[in-house]
Image (tube, rainbow, N blue to C red; front, side):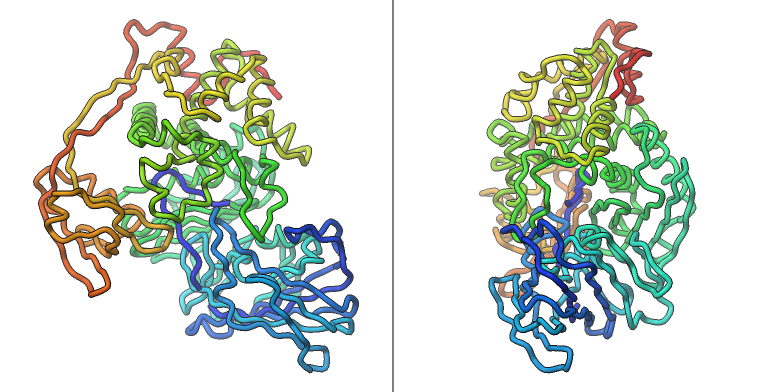
Length: 618
């Protein structure tokens, strides 16, 4: 459910007091994970009141109609990120009352589930929950705005997850607008066909700026919550025209009439994007946007393509969503990583990057994989399964793990080139996606993880790809890069360069602080007093965030590194001279004696199209 285009970090919910009341009718069969096999409820209606932005207080009411005497209420333990975050840790209290206002018994069954009894004549259930986390993966209410991923604040009735859902927002501050992909009615309520669709529809409220445009028969709404001096709405909309046109034409599909982009450009640490079925929410820090260190076009293209890959072309192992525990899947290398492959194609087709830029980025991704010793011990499938460990600092070390984003993107390129090779140019990654869209998404089916991807690739290429998937998707064999790129006339040139050595490594988990993971023995960083476990507050005078590698990457050996760090005894400023180290580099260059056929295949590859006129179609 999360999205991390390459160098993005993520944010964890920590956040506003919410009082919720839920409405139920008849019981239904419920699976162990809380998925009802047939809804007993016609409608569940939430009233969410933004009662006190200063204190992050929200009040929500829903009435339980007469019917069943007992109801179980479940608050999801995860949402938006592949991490169990236990939103119930922020619940202050839960209570219930009948229609006459007299208290009813409500009992906690586990850390995130409650049961109300004696509700046969109707009841009201209320609770308070603290939510104040910025970013596309959280929920926040403050005097400036509200942004809500509703799964993080709304319990669902275990006997009514498939019921029609409605939500109304009350006590919205004067001057605030509401932005959400949910359909609305004249009474001010927003509607969803079930709980899953409700919580897959983010809500932005505030005095935001807005624009809209039409492209290829679709209508797009653009919402920006930021200082107007930090961005150019006309430029954003112009680039969105190109991205949406390139993506929908490449997929030969537009599975929506209306779509919404929500952008936040805060000052300080920020970053990431979260896909939804009919919208996306994206955060980029205002400083990064101004410097261009995190291109907005890339994360936008990535999130937009997710409306197909993940939201509609979806692995069976993620269905149904189990809000009570981890959903393990081996397919994130495809659902997330190959979305990054598609991102590159979309940007090329949109004219927002050129061939040299694309090849340089691709070579950089190869370098990132090869520099991680774990590429020889952890497969793309295993990285997908281990996504639930990403919040642990040790797991993120290069010797422990690879990224399913990184290797998945490379596997997408490799699969594209392999399909082109074995089909003599009649098929490509485009045909793989179109086949999956036609045979899975449009038929309401889900694909069988890596086997489902292989099925699609073999269907359009008419070739056996078992060896490819065994070696590089399920296995950890070294990738023969020159063999991979030979068909498009490229070779991988390895070299070394002398770079600055900071003497330490650090990382952050979403909106958690940046922590020092390792300090090189005998380094200048160690002599300056930096220690494992220190919290880094600033790097080179700027808040430590998802783009903190940028100022360090610009250093030369001998330059001064300055950190503001803290530990138990307080904050301190540390400075030292950067050392030097040899680092492996890669470039993709033309092979000697480039042939006409290689040129033709490369041109088709960079367009994202099959080479032969009579290309295989789904």
